[in-house]
Amino acid sequence: MEKAKKMPIGMKDLFYATLLEDPKGGLTTYATPKSLAGAVTGNLNPNGSMTPFFSDDGPTVVVTSQGLLELELGIDALEKEVAAEIFGWRIDANGVLIEGDSANQPYIALGWRSETTDGGYKYVWLYKGKIQPPSEEYQTKGESVEIKSGSLNASFIKRDSDGEKKVSVHSNDEDVKPTVLVDWFKKVYEPDQDIPAA
Image (cartoon, rainbow, N blue to C red; front, side, top):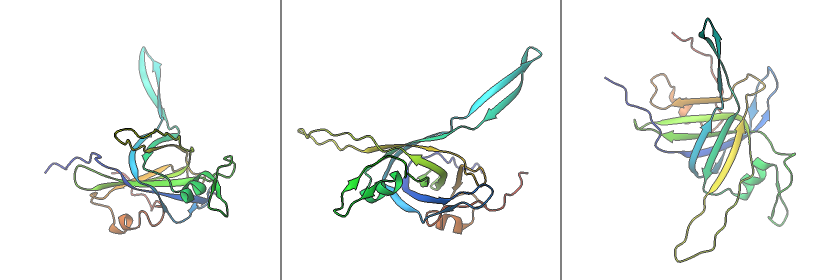
């Protein structure tokens, strides 16, 4: 029987976790994941490159390289507590959000899941990145009201500890342990021992 195609048809459960430690050759640790915002859209660009080498009048070798992972994210709205944490800002004693420079902005992991055409979900974590403060758009009300959604741009790099940048899994994959999916948003997933490719 032909396997059902796993094409994305949705995006939900957008979470972030502050990166606490990422020592080279050591163990990366994160805070407990928290909800970021309602997900609207997501566009992930790996920015890789392919460079051919030519000899004997033709291409004989292709060298690939991985670039910066860039994410364009559409959301509903950020709560001020979330904005303060992911941008390194602060909230004063009167509950006012104070936007300063980015010197204190932490690295974060970002995760979500996407429903697919086979009835399952693809689960994703991006391991180490920063989000730019969002642009803000306002418009006066007319005869009809237009709701403005938010937009975020983020860049992700490899971890110092192990060089990893991203992990993903599909809920309908036969070799996935149920606990992996149950715990996906309770803590940032850490890779288990790899299974050699056949």
